[in-house]
Length: 280
Length: 184
Image 1 (cartoon, rainbow over the protein chains, first blue to last red):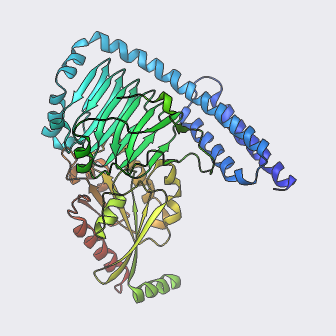
Image 2: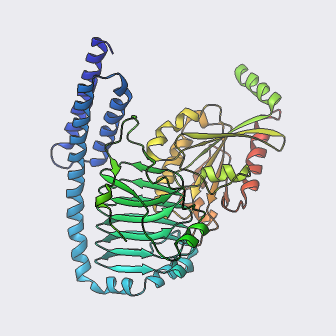
């Protein structure tokens, strides 16, 4: 890159950085707009990365991380406000929670009785619960876990697919899923699962213990860590083979970050160090 | 007009059709393509860029483009619009949560000038799953009745077991054939 090109790049970079900066300062920040602007900035940097001096690249990456953290902080703050409200309503109506926890099976049969409504959440709005979904309830069905907090969900059997949205501080432990796992807006949670495909959207600080035969896709994620599936249970071999997953083929560390097109390691995910892995 | 005539003639000679398959991620686009082509559907990865398959069907040569549906890929969809004869919009019939997103993306595609002449086939996929919305319900949700600019049809199907894939593609091919290969 010539001096001239570098100057042009730097001024463009400056403009884009300024734009994101403006978007995240002040009250009433629209994090969606800011994230999009940041995405443009990230793309611009990764496109130019091969021809940039190491110092400029490092500085740009540092700036991106700073802005990303800022956006996440704002999102977290808004989420916390929402969370507080949610907990309070929950306390006012404790009956709703207990009803749901006592008979998760009934929720599922509800979904099958009304086939015309699309997928209904299998479990929704729970805090501090430990629930097992047994293989009768899960087999060949799509399971959807929505808005759970500080809960542990154990999934037995082989669901057709697994959807998880709005989970905070949760532990989701399962065997193989027949097709795909879809995850959105999850925070500080642990997932132990086997599957053919996995898509992770808008999630952060999550740990994954995976057995996957294709590749993992992450999009708008931050601080996600990956480890191989390490859970042993007696029907494991039989269940994995029924789900068409070969135990010898595991691409748990093949991760495609759609917000990081550069050849360098994405800053949004990492391998979970062996000494930090939990044993199940 | 002259250009159009030349294009028509060119296509007539080869009897070629270009189909573009789009939809949200996890809808089953690649599974439909592979199933239709008689390939194994248990080893498919989420699509990073696109897949293209050329196959013979009803004496036509179909060039089917299957483009990844991840959010960050959708802005690249427009790179595939050129000379598309048929648009196949694939819907995950069980994913009610993202149906609004799905509707928005479809209707913004229909505004595209370069897709103006294309026939639209909507595949309401995953009908084999308990709890999936019916084709009629998807039609309502996607507000298909409001479409006046394109020939369209919705077909409930299952890519996993192959149900109705053929009848959907048959209709699409016939509709396109009647439009571009017959004299007006």
